[in-house]
Image (tube, rainbow, N blue to C red; front, side, top):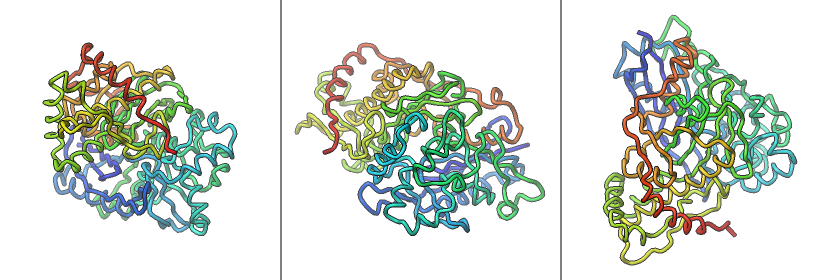
Length: 490
């Protein structure tokens, strides 16, 4: 029985899953990784932690399904986007990776636009502190001796690929988030690179996510007990593109809403969609001749976790949501609930403001943890509605939309999102598996185990959440107040 491994390098953990040729989940493993915040607005990780966590996650699979693991035919990779991993000429890491949710590079974002007058047309996106290119400008300014040693810049999953194979390769969906890629041509853009102080030679080679990018090295194969054959590694994808592959969102109009650390609305397209002035992410998909539009709220399920810690509920997020549900069951109380602006880590769509801050408005003594929890759930939904407005303006609104991510476990929140967005939301089977499952599917494609049509099929739908028109009307009034809460920092 052939098996396929998918590995996802997330922000809080590295997850691995093993599936068979029928896409049946055989085993999974994960290991946590630490985010370091040495200064305000900084967010970094040690790339060695990704490598160690991947070994631990795969080790767990080998414990649970040793004989099935020996039938491994291909590996797929997924990972957090934008995070800059800097290597010297010997392949050694020069400094901790600067992550996607790092906000230090505001000055460098403005500088990129000044250096490249046609930046929007070339990059199809605007500059953001979370993206890769401004991070390298920051390193050049603040760590010039280190910058001079940079031989390669890799994204997290591509660093893992390097450790697995010894090769410097990336896929086009992940590389689209660097601001160095011509998204339409799906190739590195020399003007964007030069404007950011970079050279083509510092970039990895590019492949499509479903193509073979490299092969597992003999050293790692021996370590994992896989000898006597070459194990291909698929190009893989950025975490959101991989999640889309995992739920079959690969045809034009197929979309998903992800409720993880951040909140994402994603729609697959057959053309490049671009609206940089409204902070739309127009990227390559992980499959050939496909693109996607994406909007991001930087704090989603993480906002609820933050509130849980603040109110003494710890990790009992489900209990906090139940309190919110009870509170909002009385329409009069719900209408008098505080409003929450969920910009705990700044914001991307539609404001592109790393200095944006969160706030409660209308907070009173009678408001308890349930009221605050309701406000947080609603505020994240409003932030995602801002993003949907941007997709609509780009003529890229999803025709179908699935729910994925840990936050999708809550039926109450799913219903609230459907009401606010005025969109039917489908909860698929296996909604929590996400990007690692998409990576496994890309491994299947690279390993010749089927076509895009046969491998990337949509899952069965566990539940559908239809908008409640009466509730949507009441929420629209609260959203009108919400949209006036934001004001640019300074």
